[in-house]
Length: 157
Length: 153
Image (tube, rainbow over all chains, first blue to last red; front, side):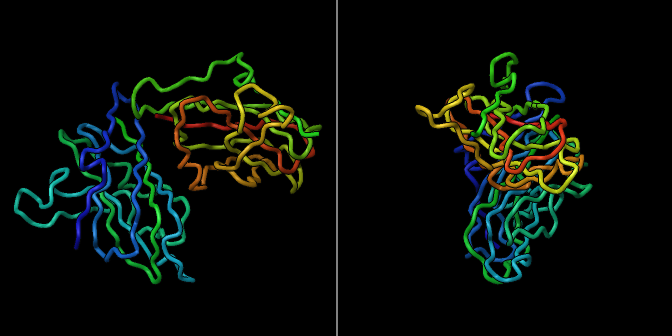
């Protein structure tokens, strides 16, 4: 299992937070999902700022699998354990993990747009610290190909 | 002859809002009355995407403007400047299909959510741009056609 970090995580780009109570902010994160990625690899893609909850999430994907059944290439998207930017969970030095609150085994191989439909995406409680939003390659698919995976996240206090 | 029709937002009577903070999402519902005398290829310059903004989401809501199975629209970014008829000289402005391509809502009343990846990938620019609706195939009755745009920086 490999863990990579987006520019948002490395500090190259700044993640906004809402300025007023109830104010909604949206960020579109984008990453190139490489054909060389292995199952269970994780991309630490975005940040859910402290005191915020997810309001909605939308995937927009290129064609990521050229097989006649591209639906086998799937991702989980959710909150990661540990601290933003860390390689390992600082609590016990274990590998960081990625949840599936936003998307669970979502098929992205064929490309297109997918909207969050899991109850768990809309019931994330705010906490007093920043959290990482991760993408876990749940299934490599059959004939993977490089392509963009966009994730628009709406969040609010 | 293709007609370029301008909404009150495009002609300046209404002011399109812009986000006040980084990442802030604002929503505007742009509406126009579709008339059955429109022709295939006509473009309605409906809304404004302010400078430095990108589209986060979009939804069409529409009455039954067709009563049949013909009505079809594209929704996208127009070339040229806001409020103008021509892009250069006497060349009429054109309308893209980044947000909806061949949308059929309007054949009966309903809504359509944006489902094209290109709709989520419009890069910001440093000037206002027009959001247009191109009448690919006209309907036979009139009605209301509206586009709710979520946008942010």
